[in-house]
Length: 233
Image (cartoon, rainbow, N blue to C red; front, side, top):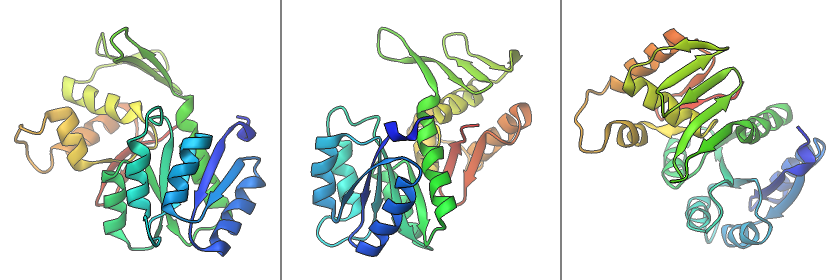
């Protein structure tokens, strides 16, 4: 992948952190812009349309959560990824960030190599090939050695057909539709089972376990206390 094709907006009210992030990501070839607060981040996002916004949560004035909500309300921003920088142990910030439309979070402090790896993993999401019906509905996803065909409820792994019951299929399709995005447990319940359906607390875990038994453990990652995400191989 040519990383110079990707625009990243870095947002933090601490100058030292912005310099650290900018230096390490520019060294990898990324096209970097910076902002020092939430309002500036919203304005720049509208102007430059970055592929990824990497944003601190706790900032004076408009914080990262509010800025993310503003970005998610913009037209033509559905493909812009938003990842939050959070201090270690800020579980509330992480959950609030996902509920605001964030795709992932990165815990501070972070080592340069880990930072670059996490950013590249997020941007690899765009390598997933989607086929969309005339109605605008996703019908087929291709990611690495997996093909998921919604019209035929068919899963292929390296060309071999894998049989999944309907809910397991819908759960897998949801996760792969946005690779590296963390889906909260509540979001999964609403999208797969429907908010008016009553199911047990362990229902999602059981379905994830069964999917892993059939596909392998490398595809779906557990985000402890929050939910699950699909990893791009």
